[in-house]
Image 1 (cartoon, helix red, strand yellow):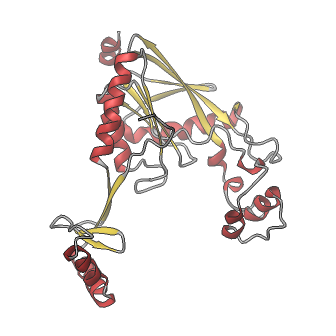
Image 2: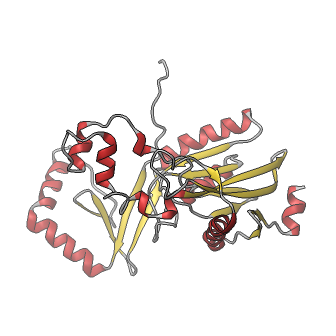
Image 3: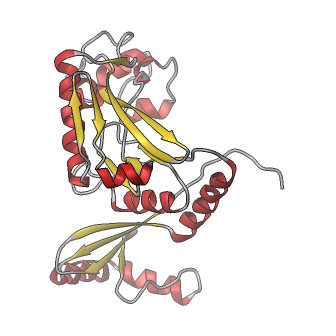
Length: 288
């Protein structure tokens, strides 16, 4: 059939691992509310399917007993296989393959990539990707080098001008509890309490980096990071446009990015208004 535009989704399988005594409480709540009885009835009537033996579903969430509470996130196997099939096809047809994902999910902290994103990044590179780029959470995350290929877990915002839209749907006014007589600019002004809350109140949403990756063939031979500012503190019609950061602002952005990358074993050398990836001698020989 004819192709048509749409999403290329990577669904996420979520499992909440909790202590055994906590799981027993959830099971009792489900029974007391009649939720478990309705679920069993759907299965008996052929409208539903049972879960794996170690999973207990409750209100759309899946729970499993564990010694340590943790939110486990894994990529849907079918979606992952379909995406990787086309990563492999891109590898056949191009010099450099870039895989990008838009995802808001996080790990233990907002700066940590979700578990499924790391798995997807590794699988993409195994399938032939040369660069993996994440975006979505509006903040910077670290850089990891996997098989001499860069993984940027999030490059944050490069342009931030949603406050300049000329129209908003009616449900936006309902969501933010603003009268319909407000213009879009007035709605955003009220939503952010005159820039005292939300994106305009936090510098990390207005800082990012611009990476320059140099390849010889498919070998990464150089990676230079430039600091970028989106102009926090300027008037809303001026801020949100990327410009190279300089001075103390540049140093702060690069130091922050370097700190985010250290947990992945990534070493960056800071020099004036840029930083470079430090590659060991064996890595350089492998790349050359």
